[in-house]
Amino acid sequence: MTQLTLVIGNKNYSSWSLRPWLAMKQFGLEFNEIRIPLYNNEDFSLKIRQYSPSGKVPVLLHDTQTVWDSLAICEYLAETFPTLQWWPKDKAARALARSISAEMHSGFQNLRQNMPMNCRTKYPGKGLVSGVQQDIDHITSIWQESRQKFGNGGNLLFGNFTIADAFFAPVVLRFVTYDVQLDPISRNYVEAVWALPAMQEWIDSAKSETEIISKYEF
Image (cartoon, rainbow, N blue to C red; front, side):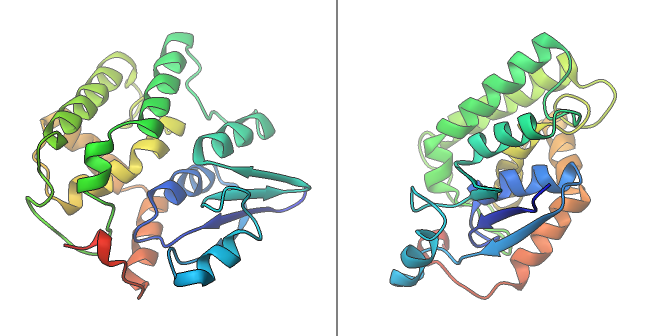
Protein backbone atom coordinates (compact mmCIF):
# COMPACT_ATOMS: atom_id res chain seq x y z
CA MET A 1 0.00 0.00 0.00
CA THR A 2 1.23 3.44 -0.91
CA GLN A 3 2.72 5.39 1.95
CA LEU A 4 0.41 7.77 3.76
CA THR A 5 1.41 11.43 4.06
CA LEU A 6 -0.13 13.83 6.55
CA VAL A 7 0.28 17.57 6.03
CA ILE A 8 0.05 19.48 9.31
CA GLY A 9 0.66 22.92 10.80
CA ASN A 10 2.67 23.92 13.86
CA LYS A 11 2.40 21.29 16.56
CA ASN A 12 2.29 23.97 19.21
CA TYR A 13 -0.82 25.63 17.83
CA SER A 14 -2.63 23.42 15.30
CA SER A 15 -5.39 21.58 17.15
CA TRP A 16 -6.90 20.41 13.87
CA SER A 17 -3.61 18.76 12.87
CA LEU A 18 -3.26 16.97 16.20
CA ARG A 19 -6.44 14.95 15.80
CA PRO A 20 -5.61 12.74 12.78
CA TRP A 21 -1.91 12.71 13.67
CA LEU A 22 -2.63 11.30 17.14
CA ALA A 23 -5.11 8.75 15.78
CA MET A 24 -2.63 7.53 13.17
CA LYS A 25 0.13 7.24 15.75
CA GLN A 26 -2.08 5.45 18.28
CA PHE A 27 -3.19 2.90 15.70
CA GLY A 28 0.37 2.24 14.59
CA LEU A 29 0.13 3.56 11.04
CA GLU A 30 3.34 4.53 9.29
CA PHE A 31 3.16 7.86 7.53
CA ASN A 32 5.25 10.71 6.23
CA GLU A 33 4.76 14.10 7.82
CA ILE A 34 4.92 17.47 6.10
CA ARG A 35 4.85 20.40 8.51
CA ILE A 36 3.92 23.83 7.15
CA PRO A 37 4.06 26.61 9.78
CA LEU A 38 0.74 28.44 10.02
CA TYR A 39 0.21 32.01 8.87
CA ASN A 40 3.79 32.44 7.73
CA ASN A 41 2.88 35.40 5.52
CA GLU A 42 2.21 34.38 1.90
CA ASP A 43 4.57 31.42 2.25
CA PHE A 44 1.97 29.37 4.11
CA SER A 45 -0.76 30.01 1.54
CA LEU A 46 1.49 29.10 -1.35
CA LYS A 47 2.76 25.92 0.26
CA ILE A 48 -0.54 24.60 1.61
CA ARG A 49 -2.31 25.16 -1.72
CA GLN A 50 0.04 22.57 -3.21
CA TYR A 51 -1.75 19.96 -1.10
CA SER A 52 -5.05 21.33 0.19
CA PRO A 53 -8.03 22.49 -1.89
CA SER A 54 -9.32 24.34 1.18
CA GLY A 55 -6.02 26.05 1.90
CA LYS A 56 -6.06 24.61 5.41
CA VAL A 57 -4.41 21.84 7.40
CA PRO A 58 -4.56 18.93 7.97
CA VAL A 59 -4.49 17.08 4.66
CA LEU A 60 -4.03 13.35 4.08
CA LEU A 61 -2.41 12.16 0.85
CA HIS A 62 -2.84 8.50 -0.10
CA ASP A 63 -2.33 7.10 -3.60
CA THR A 64 -4.22 9.56 -5.84
CA GLN A 65 -6.59 10.48 -3.00
CA THR A 66 -6.50 13.82 -1.18
CA VAL A 67 -8.57 14.07 2.01
CA TRP A 68 -8.86 17.30 3.98
CA ASP A 69 -10.65 18.17 7.21
CA SER A 70 -9.73 16.26 10.36
CA LEU A 71 -13.00 14.33 10.70
CA ALA A 72 -13.04 13.33 7.04
CA ILE A 73 -9.45 12.10 7.38
CA CYS A 74 -10.27 9.94 10.39
CA GLU A 75 -13.35 8.49 8.69
CA TYR A 76 -11.29 7.73 5.58
CA LEU A 77 -8.68 5.96 7.67
CA ALA A 78 -11.38 3.95 9.46
CA GLU A 79 -12.63 2.73 6.08
CA THR A 80 -9.13 2.09 4.73
CA PHE A 81 -7.96 0.14 7.78
CA PRO A 82 -11.17 -1.57 8.96
CA THR A 83 -9.43 -4.16 11.15
CA LEU A 84 -8.40 -1.39 13.56
CA GLN A 85 -10.93 -0.35 16.19
CA TRP A 86 -11.34 3.34 15.28
CA TRP A 87 -14.82 3.49 16.81
CA PRO A 88 -16.30 1.49 19.71
CA LYS A 89 -17.72 -1.94 18.81
CA ASP A 90 -20.95 -1.44 20.74
CA LYS A 91 -23.61 0.30 18.64
CA ALA A 92 -24.79 2.64 21.40
CA ALA A 93 -21.23 3.54 22.34
CA ARG A 94 -20.36 4.10 18.70
CA ALA A 95 -23.34 6.42 18.25
CA LEU A 96 -22.27 8.48 21.25
CA ALA A 97 -18.64 8.55 20.09
CA ARG A 98 -19.65 9.80 16.64
CA SER A 99 -22.00 12.41 18.12
CA ILE A 100 -19.50 13.90 20.53
CA SER A 101 -16.73 13.89 17.91
CA ALA A 102 -18.97 15.76 15.48
CA GLU A 103 -19.96 18.23 18.19
CA MET A 104 -16.31 18.81 19.10
CA HIS A 105 -15.55 19.28 15.42
CA SER A 106 -18.10 22.05 14.96
CA GLY A 107 -18.81 23.52 18.38
CA PHE A 108 -17.35 25.04 21.53
CA GLN A 109 -16.44 28.30 19.81
CA ASN A 110 -16.03 30.24 23.07
CA LEU A 111 -13.40 27.80 24.30
CA ARG A 112 -11.60 27.74 20.95
CA GLN A 113 -11.42 31.51 20.64
CA ASN A 114 -10.47 32.38 24.20
CA MET A 115 -8.26 29.42 25.12
CA PRO A 116 -6.24 28.72 21.96
CA MET A 117 -4.06 25.62 21.96
CA ASN A 118 -0.52 26.37 23.09
CA CYS A 119 1.49 23.38 24.30
CA ARG A 120 4.69 25.01 25.42
CA THR A 121 3.50 27.50 28.01
CA LYS A 122 1.09 27.90 30.92
CA TYR A 123 -1.59 30.57 31.32
CA PRO A 124 -3.43 29.69 34.57
CA GLY A 125 -6.83 31.35 34.70
CA LYS A 126 -6.49 33.17 31.38
CA GLY A 127 -9.27 33.10 28.82
CA LEU A 128 -12.06 32.32 31.27
CA VAL A 129 -14.44 34.91 29.86
CA SER A 130 -18.22 34.75 29.45
CA GLY A 131 -19.33 31.56 27.76
CA VAL A 132 -16.10 29.63 28.22
CA GLN A 133 -17.11 28.02 31.52
CA GLN A 134 -20.32 26.86 29.86
CA ASP A 135 -18.28 25.10 27.17
CA ILE A 136 -16.03 23.58 29.84
CA ASP A 137 -19.01 22.31 31.79
CA HIS A 138 -20.55 20.74 28.72
CA ILE A 139 -17.29 19.05 27.73
CA THR A 140 -16.79 17.59 31.20
CA SER A 141 -20.38 16.33 31.22
CA ILE A 142 -19.65 14.55 27.92
CA TRP A 143 -16.53 13.00 29.42
CA GLN A 144 -18.42 11.90 32.53
CA GLU A 145 -21.23 10.30 30.54
CA SER A 146 -18.84 8.49 28.19
CA ARG A 147 -16.64 7.19 30.99
CA GLN A 148 -19.53 6.13 33.21
CA LYS A 149 -21.52 4.39 30.47
CA PHE A 150 -18.82 2.92 28.26
CA GLY A 151 -15.41 3.45 29.89
CA ASN A 152 -14.91 0.00 31.38
CA GLY A 153 -11.72 -1.72 30.29
CA GLY A 154 -9.53 1.35 30.00
CA ASN A 155 -8.89 4.95 31.04
CA LEU A 156 -10.20 6.66 27.91
CA LEU A 157 -13.69 7.78 26.93
CA PHE A 158 -14.77 4.38 25.66
CA GLY A 159 -12.16 2.32 27.46
CA ASN A 160 -9.66 1.94 24.64
CA PHE A 161 -8.49 4.72 22.34
CA THR A 162 -10.95 5.81 19.62
CA ILE A 163 -11.38 8.71 17.24
CA ALA A 164 -13.36 10.45 19.97
CA ASP A 165 -10.23 10.67 22.13
CA ALA A 166 -8.30 12.11 19.21
CA PHE A 167 -10.93 14.81 18.83
CA PHE A 168 -10.83 15.81 22.48
CA ALA A 169 -7.02 15.66 22.73
CA PRO A 170 -6.60 19.39 21.93
CA VAL A 171 -9.06 20.17 24.73
CA VAL A 172 -6.90 18.15 27.10
CA LEU A 173 -3.93 20.32 26.13
CA ARG A 174 -5.98 23.48 26.62
CA PHE A 175 -7.15 22.40 30.06
CA VAL A 176 -3.53 21.81 31.10
CA THR A 177 -2.28 25.09 29.64
CA TYR A 178 -4.99 27.17 31.33
CA ASP A 179 -5.07 25.08 34.53
CA VAL A 180 -8.80 24.46 34.27
CA GLN A 181 -10.28 23.10 37.48
CA LEU A 182 -11.88 19.70 36.88
CA ASP A 183 -13.95 17.05 38.60
CA PRO A 184 -12.18 13.74 39.43
CA ILE A 185 -13.47 11.85 36.37
CA SER A 186 -12.41 14.60 33.98
CA ARG A 187 -9.06 15.07 35.72
CA ASN A 188 -8.30 11.35 35.44
CA TYR A 189 -9.22 11.43 31.77
CA VAL A 190 -6.92 14.40 31.13
CA GLU A 191 -4.08 12.54 32.83
CA ALA A 192 -4.73 9.41 30.75
CA VAL A 193 -4.64 11.28 27.43
CA TRP A 194 -1.64 13.35 28.49
CA ALA A 195 0.27 10.15 29.30
CA LEU A 196 -0.21 8.54 25.88
CA PRO A 197 3.24 8.06 24.27
CA ALA A 198 2.01 9.61 21.03
CA MET A 199 0.71 12.63 22.92
CA GLN A 200 4.05 13.06 24.65
CA GLU A 201 5.79 12.84 21.28
CA TRP A 202 3.58 15.63 19.94
CA ILE A 203 4.15 17.82 23.01
CA ASP A 204 7.92 17.33 22.87
CA SER A 205 7.95 18.35 19.21
CA ALA A 206 5.73 21.35 19.94
CA LYS A 207 8.11 22.58 22.62
CA SER A 208 11.02 22.46 20.18
CA GLU A 209 9.32 24.70 17.64
CA THR A 210 10.45 28.32 17.44
CA GLU A 211 7.60 29.98 15.53
CA ILE A 212 5.42 32.40 17.51
CA ILE A 213 1.86 33.26 16.49
CA SER A 214 1.00 36.30 18.58
CA LYS A 215 -2.78 35.86 18.48
CA TYR A 216 -2.37 32.52 20.26
CA GLU A 217 -0.23 34.03 23.01
CA PHE A 218 -1.29 36.07 26.05
